[in-house]
Length: 404
Image (cartoon, rainbow, N blue to C red; front, side):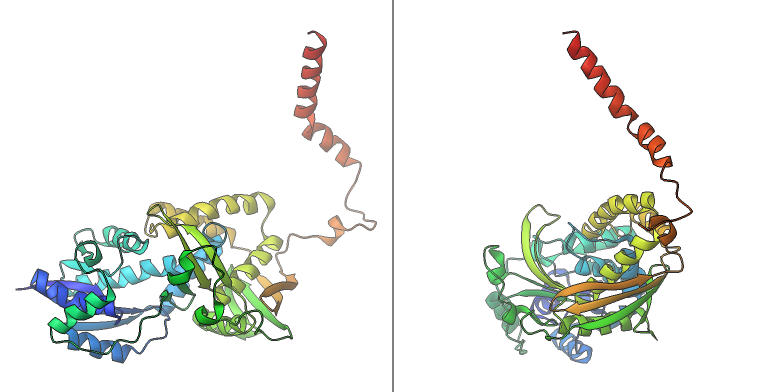
């Protein structure tokens, strides 16, 4: 029997070339798998193309809800933002895609999983660490690290040699990755950080601030234990909330990020990200936490969220450490329940009110007016004790200086 290879398939030129290349070089059956994580795609057309090119089987697996509920929301609860800017849209999606590939490989008793990630990027690491964690008996094939093909023209010529002349859409000058949470743009003129992005050519979801409406819009988000459950008083699923926020935020120019980031493989890369709905969610969630988290927990969470973000970015979703940090995040969210009102205006998010039944803000204690609950005289003893180490150090230095 021929070996079976499960291929992470997109329907684009790269993965279409990989199908006949795998059959030529591994004498195998190729099972093409498309994982739906909310990208806008004609999956029927992708299926037809896969069979025409030589796939023996095709699967289209819908993981959108799982992606949102089990990957996006745990990252939201931990405040996971890589290098204080990148909301991890691609990095969060890779483990759920890998999980689907492993499930199909196990079902089909396939020996290999193949992917089209290049040898320069982060995704090769994310895919392969996921496979190692979920089923280390499955071997990996990464054609871009093996074959001699160097260009789009060579890819098309390879297909033509096989008698395959399918029309592929003209390639965008930008490399893009899309899911329900974000769309990224890399390459072309963005490779030089001194170039201002040509947003009119780049943006797919989001208005530029110049094209955003001249009138702002108020929205209200309700959270229960750190999870968004209502938008403008309407109860919705997680994916519905994100889709609606993408449209609203995109209209008002929210969530356009121009980033130079440190890749896992060691180089810096520059890209433009559109994350309108996610940007609103993270902002609203953080503002609600300001009311509901005690100081020590909030400060520790800020430190741990950086470590959490690096784990996700580096492809370590399935590690014990990531699960442990998520458990910490779950505990911090026990009382992060309430409503956040935001005004959206030309790329800006302006807090317009926040309330929670578990708010730790107390007007009776913090008021500048008269109160009956706080004895200001108590501050004197606190300051004396709090400043005691400084006082002792200063007295010691004065004493040493006097005896010189």
